[in-house]
Length: 605
Image 1 (tube, rainbow, N blue to C red):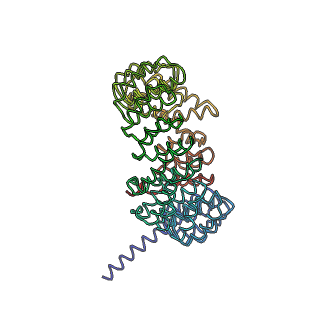
Image 2: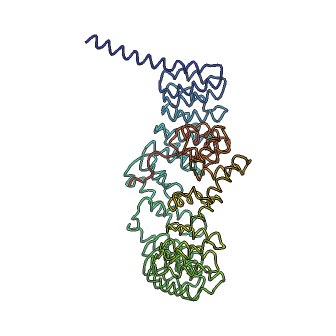
């Protein structure tokens, strides 16, 4: 037994000794005279995963070169050892923003509650470069002592601050945050993030008393005595959206009828502007008890009110409105006919198809604006109704003088998806309007008609909707890259890329990266070898997709020198943690938030 114990201790000693010896070379490199070697050694110490490296990394924080200190901070974050907390806190007010940001990020990774007080102070100082990063770090640490200050941040006038704070509160999971978060549910920009955060805190958050208080506030905001003004409209909209998010069946509540009747009274007692506002909001409420008031309003003395009432009836999708809407479409009031036609489409009233077709036949000779508006609405309605009886009328509308009428007709034919329209759509590829050509092209894509291929190649050549065009080409003609017209364009772009300068060369790199293929891969790899930052930034989707592991440092460098928000977002979404970290730092320095909430954004049921 004693021999067995001795054997185990010998193995442990060898393993631990081997681990220690494993970092010895990196420690020597971290103290080398050459700064690049020191940076390499420090990075390797962080990647080693060995806590024996922590004292050496803390020592490296005193290096005279900022690059080495930055690498040491990152490495300490990777090792997640609380012994580094105190020294990292000392970097929070470093004059170099990059070092302060790295320290904040490292403290978030370590997760030591001892850092909360210092990070809260950074948040309260409201330094734009550091504030978002500190909020995010507090969320990662997950200590409830930060909840109060984060709840205050949800009231910031900056949406980025509100957004990151909501994510952080969800990570912490304190019930103290439920009330402040529930109050944000009316903010459309914030809603999905808030739902995610609430679900993280409590799967049954809707039953919480704090949420019931928010619902009551939303209800009061709907019962306004003063309905005019943009500020009142925003309050109403947010209250309604908040209710929809919290209580999807709120229309069944006892108090819902009082809300609807309140707005119906405005339809009869208000002035012209108030009745128009009420007509619009009743459509937003989508409560069937408002249908009768809106039907009456279709005969209001004010045509703006009539028009708004008709639009709202379309939103309601109540077939009681069908007869009234049909009469309006064939009536003489051109101001509301187009709106009524569109409402019939929203209503999905297929019984109106023959009537709409007859209006097309009667009105095709009109070339003025009123004729355009009505025909455009009928084209959209026939597409929404998705009835094959409308195909011939839509084909006729492809010959209408109005380009937007022709464009909507092409789009609606695609929605119906009947191959009988293919020949007319192929002719529309030669239309004088780019809107019509593109609408016809995308419709032919849905029909998988090969006649659209030259147009898609043209789109690729002009850099218009390239990703969509490439996907469509791949579906319709898998070998499209070997087409002579494509090869001709590729040859020209490669020539520009190799011999051109400035913007032309960057544009060529972007086109090549979007097309892809073995030949292009070899061309673009040269830019990576030569650290051509302009090209790497322009073609970043290609390099992230194909060479993320090998191109990490080049992509980070390109982001700092030539990158934009699109590139940072792509790096954040990659599976490369170093790219994601660089993207967050890039955004924080510019007062932006690129934080990815953990898990799926849902509302927890």
